[in-house]
Every structure is written in C-alpha cells, then in structure tokens.
Length: 235
Image 1 (cartoon, rainbow, N blue to C red):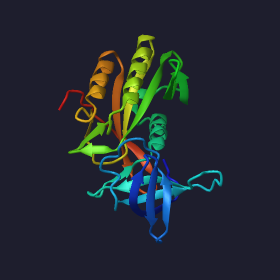
Image 2: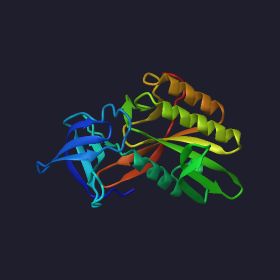
Image 3: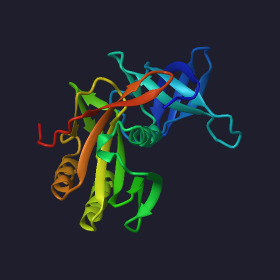
C-alpha cells in the first residue's frame, strides 16, 4: 500500500486520544489527527520522530494525520488504524493472506448481527462467507505483538459477534495486523486485559480463526509481508 507524501517532525504530545501536537522539520507546530483509539504504549512518547500526511480538503477540521512513528529502538511503526483494514484487504487480494484465497468479492464495513459492522466480508461461489475483524497492533515486547494495549470491552464484544456468525455456519476470523517489523509472534495481552485473552481463547474454541500478519513499513509504503504464529496459551 503506497502512502501519501509524508512530512517529518517530532512529537510534542498526544492528548485527548485523537490529537497530537507535532513540530515539523521547518519549525512549524501543527495539530494532527491521531487515527488510533488505543493507549499506544511505546509509540507515543514525546520527542519521537513522526511522519504526517496532509489532506487538501478545506472542510476537514484538521489537515494533518499522524501516520508513522519511530520507536526508541529505531523501528518504524504504522499507527494509523484505518490503514490496517486496507492492508489486510490488499493482502487477501494478492494472495499473501493464504487463509482467505479463493474469495471473489470483498466488502468493507458491512452491518451484521444487528448492531455490529464487520471490517471485511468475503464472499465466494460455493463457500460460506468469511467475516474478518482486523485489529491493528502496535505494541511489541520482546518480539511478541500484543493486543489490546488497553482494556477494551468493545474488542471483547467483537469476539462474541464473530462466535455468533460461526454458529450460523459462516467463517469468522480475527486478524491481528502488526504494522512493524520486529514481531515474531502474536498473542493476547493478558497482562493488560485478561478478560480479552480469555474471550479470545473461548472464541477460538468455538471456531473463530485467529491469524496474524506482519507488515514491512517505510515512509513510502506499508506492505503486508508474512504470517506470524498466534500464541493463545498464557505466557
């Protein structure tokens, strides 16, 4: 996935979840939209090198959007949650996501189960539909990509909705999209949200498929690169 042209700067602060003040390399201080609802542990530290995209839409309240950050260890991380869905859809289309080959149609943000919206709905002749929930993962500790990075009741509800689709005869998958290159395995963040870890294990036991893919990240593009094993047993 090609990124729009990016402008570099230094993060001054992230606040009110969706706002970040950044000093651009030319000295200008701007406020950027932060398209990430998580705690962003380890990827939102003041003084970090960051990259922003700029929209020309005059109707947008904030013209700048935070896209990438460089961690203290020098790893580039894609923090824009909205990019994760597009990355996984692209990976399905080009065959990288091997679990989901053979579907001829991908729809996004489809309402299901009453009040839920699925990130990706895959349909193909002669096969059950596949409901794919994508989770952007930015927290990595000792090579383990951990989700969630904060207690998330909403994420637990998503797992319950996926279980319900399996019970109706569909496929349902949770896909952890890791937008950084230093992860070797994916796992639920039991130390942060043990209820989510328990819910994920229940969902998998009920037939929900848990997969994870790692992306290669640079300032020009982000590409879904390879699968990661998903470790469900508590560390």
